[in-house]
Picture (tube, rainbow, N blue to C red):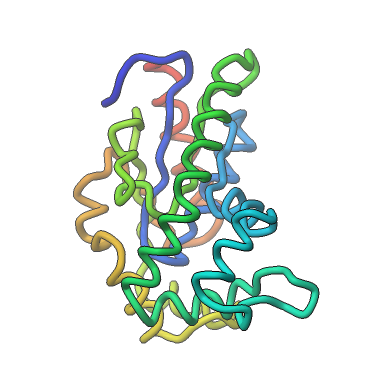
Amino acid sequence: MGNPRKKPIIGIIGGIASGKSTVAAEFGRLGCAVIDADAIAHDLLAEGPVRDQVSELFGREILQSDGRVDRRRLAAVVFADPQKLAALNGVIHPGVLQRTEELIAKYNDCPHVKAIVLDMPLLIEVGWANRCDRLIFVKCDRKRRTDRMRNRGFMDEREVEFRENFQISVDKKAELADNTIDNNSDFLTLVRQIQDIFSDITESS
């Protein structure tokens, strides 16, 4: 899948709180470079120009007392209105994708990097599936995912479902994947699956 390049690009996909970042981190421990789109977006929101655009769009009530964007308040605003979510994505996504391109170019020139992993929540939606040599779906049942988010203090089952309505369905993501990692068991089982897929990718690249 995609054009030939120096390093294999691995895209991690799945439902909200399925364990995508955990899987990406394990690939990182195996010698892959991990590009975290959420972390890039967080950094962009802390920068003056983007922060100012966001506060102009959604009001100063989404800012904390120190002037930083309150991500929970912002999420509450945009996930209640599809047009507002699209507006936010229009501000954030260009910068995220540009930075991702820069990091891919950087890691392609790093001899110790074995593969590049994209931990990007909307990877398919922004058209990056065809940039990946391997799409890996992280399978995790709804109850586990909802419990995980509730334990983090973020959202209940209804909010998980509401947010996922703005993404390609979990079933569709599973269909598009080249490999599936089952994250419904223990951590060691998860790690073994990652190691097996990693070996397959590096041996075939």
